[in-house]
Length: 188
Image (cartoon, rainbow, N blue to C red; front, side, top):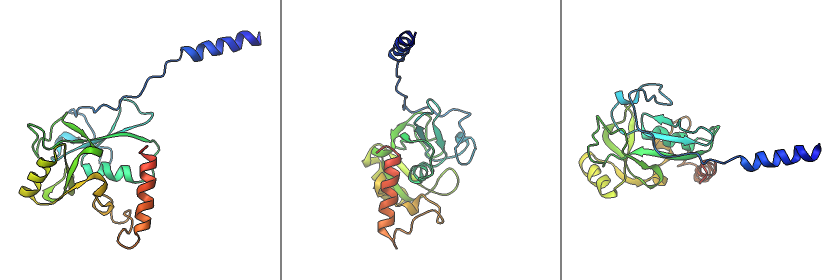
């Protein structure tokens, strides 16, 4: 009897097919709600972001501002590992500030960003503006101001609220530890 149970368990285990969780970007729709603000994203200007979390297939967290997604990734208080973050490519054909596009996503890690432009993000706060093409980021910065940076070069103080941002200028070692912890939890 024990042998029959063991064989049955082995067969069931062998039949279980592991399916990898998709991290493909999901298009914005009329009912897409921001994770932090709980507001409809299509009603707000500027670029958006989405984060795909391990164990939550098909339901990414959406963010009304790119800086919010970067802040989320850098804070260690997450319950799930981040598998992918996608950001609006503001250099894509047809992308405008009022209508950044529903499906023109680029990977956050490979995007080029403009920080400190004259344009405000979807929630009326400064944002970091993503571009798949670095030349388009430089052109945007020439027109609207700001610095062109990679994701890793965006300082925590640009995306985290003052009470949650590490004192980078006072303690660079703390900033390095926080960044290392965030990368470990993000799977990178």
